[in-house]
Image 1 (cartoon, rainbow, N blue to C red):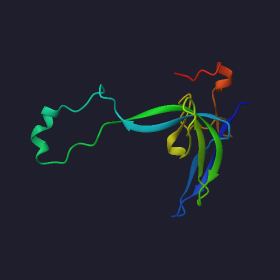
Image 2: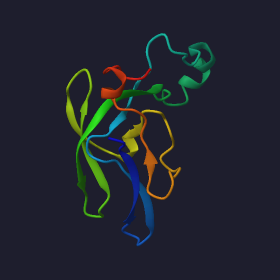
Image 3: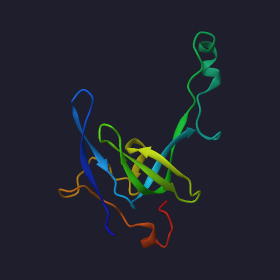
Length: 135
């Protein structure tokens, strides 16, 4: 099962056309979730900001992106025929819908690089790696 990501064209409301990845059903991907940084993450020095606090609003929280292994369960299309997905997150078993902005290949290959003429090649699936997600 060597699943590949193809590219599909989407026509935007202003009639511009963009190419977006189309992940196939059954493909192992990373679901990318933004969350607040952990307490031990580097933060902005509060003393350095003490003068500006009275004049400006507080800085936005420091965010980090967490990648969680997931499987594409189904592919759907919005009104512009842009794909979005139902995924199942490994470990928790949570199913959710998401878009291309929140999905990446497990091997972190950018989705803009074409593999031959028909999309991208996925690395091995969980079944091929003794059900151990990559680090």
